Length: 162
Length: 183
Image 1 (cartoon, rainbow over the protein chains, first blue to last red):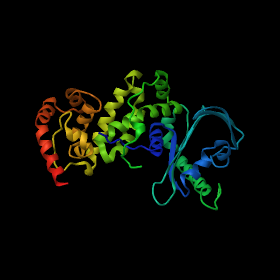
Image 2 (image 1 turned 90 degrees about the horizontal axis):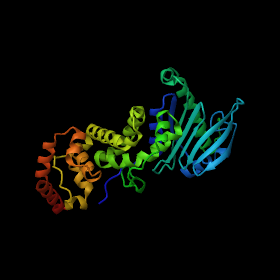
Image 3 (image 1 turned 120 degrees about the vertical axis):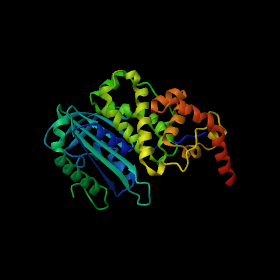
Image 4 (image 1 turned 45 degrees about the vertical axis):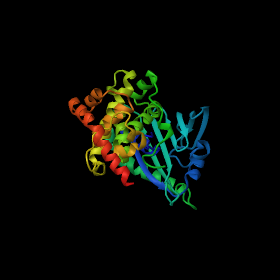
């Protein structure tokens, strides 16, 4: 006897985190590249993130235990931060003392051969639950800009920042 | 992969979460929230699947949102899975009732435990039941709860469930045999 089990992909999982975390913004899109191609870039933070993930000039993994990592991120603004990472196929979370960041990707599951992609970012400061609604429009515009960068990166002939 | 198909990773039962991880998740730690989702998502999928059927992905998502948003109200981490179960069943019934697709053509009472039809085609049985009945069946046959406890969790009178169960066997079998004979 096999009972039905509800499916639940990582994009839904990212929506759950967004709904539960005030101060975060979530944006989703369809990347015009196969999942394997997308994750061959995003699954390698040190090579794939700089120039693609906002304000990441360089990232260095300093410790690794399976899918859990510690990393030092240097931003374009010169800031340096220590992050905890979770990284597995189709799923990446990063957290520093003040910032959270997440990505989820899943095959589109049809003949378009694309990849469904979600991007989450936010800040961790006291009082964010009160301030967050005021900042939402600005952060949503920023998230849309970030998504365009990812779309350009995975469009044949495109490049980040296009 | 189908939206409500079986998934081996969801077969496992509840796994005890370290209290400290639950406490960190309650404070909004992203990594702890990730660990919490890893622990409870298979359980939530297993509960939402048979109750919400084709709406199970939505039911699981809504359940996990309610769980994470309400996490601060959970006083005892050891009670996590019992607390999640109550939320999952409530959300799955709510989502299934909201969907017009989930309204059964006719209300058939619950099959008795061990009914051969359950072993033959559980999906067919579930499609014939209302969301509340599917929830009682799930709690009884998957979770091992007695009907009184399941009824209380759903806010359905125990007497109603008992009488329906008493009438269930023959009416269910008649319907099932009739459908089976037409195949």
